[in-house]
Image (cartoon, rainbow, N blue to C red; front, side, top):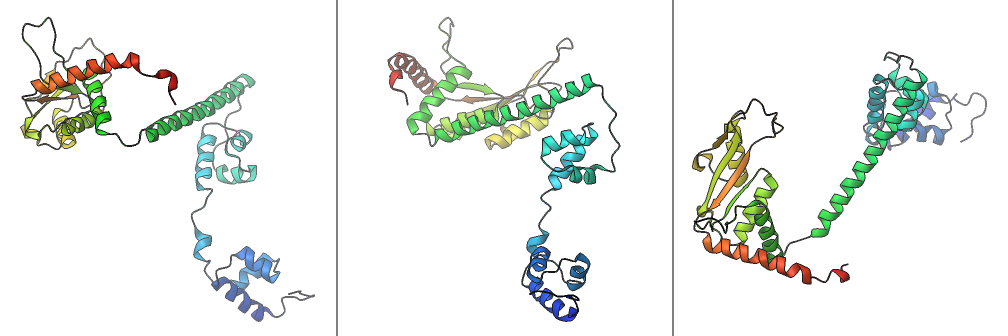
Length: 292
C-alpha cells in the first residue's frame, strides 16, 4: 500500500486493518511495516484499546542486565566499565542508573587497581566454570555401578574411614564401625551395606557433636537422613568446649558426625578386610599402559 499526501485520510479504514492485524497476533513493528505507518502518534491511535499479543509481553530480557548494571554502579563503576562488562549500550545504562548517585572520582592508581580486580574476578569466574564442567563431566562418565564396582568402592571407603582391627590389640575388633560427617558418604555407606544384605535391624546409630551445637536439630537431621526414629539412636556423645580452641565447624550446616555400628558383623568385617588387601595386591598388576 502506497500513501500519497494525506495518506492517513482514510483513518477508519486504516484502523480496521491495523486492529485486524493486531488481533491476528502481529507486533507494533510488524503492523507499522505492513501498513507503512511511520508516525508513532498515528500508530498509537490506530491501535488504541487493543492489547498487545501475549508473545510480545514476555518478561523483559534486559531485567537481569538492568539489575546488574545498578549493582555495578553502586560499586562505583563508570559507564564505560559497565558497558564492557555487560555488553549493553551506554544509553541503556544511563536510563537504568540515572537515579543513583554518581561515583566519586578515583585516582589513576585506584582506577587501575579496580580494573585489575575486575579482570581477576572475571578470570575467577571462568576458572570456576571450567572446574564445574570438569566435575560434571567426570560425574556423568561414571554411569551405573555394577554390583562388583559398588562392593569395591565400599571396601575402599570403609578402609579409609571405618574402624579397623589392630594387630597390637589384645582383643579382636572385627566388627563394622563407621563414622562420618558427610551426608553423601553416609548415604553411600548405607547403600553398600544394603547391597551386602545387612538388615536394618542390625544397625545402630549414634551422633557425635560439639556440646555448643544444636544437638536436637542434629539428631533430627541424621534420623531423617537414614530413615530412622531419633528416639532409637544411642545416646549422643558430646564433645566438651575448649575455650582456647577456635572452632571452624560452626554454623547452621554443622551437625556433627553420625556413627553407624553393625551388630554381628565379624564375618562381614573379615570379608571387607580381605577384599581390601586383594585390591592392594591387584593394583600393581593393573594394565596401566593400556588405559583409555
